[in-house]
Image (cartoon, rainbow, N blue to C red; front, top):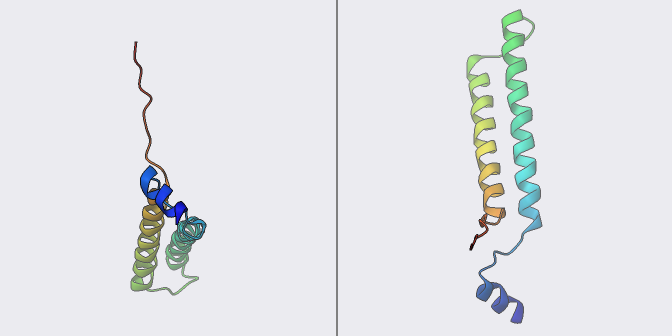
Length: 88
């Protein structure tokens, strides 16, 4: 009870370690999907991989979506930056 009152009175956001892990995982997964999309493009141009244009597009779209979700979670977890006041 007292912890909830202190958090509300101080205006502090609760810290969720699981959200940190999920944000990092989503951003890392997005980078790997972007790499896979690049390899699909290169493989398609050399004729070694018969991936379709739709598959490449969906891979890039999924990577962008996961990266944006990860960045939103990461931004929510960071405390707002307070600039120091200089009083001469």
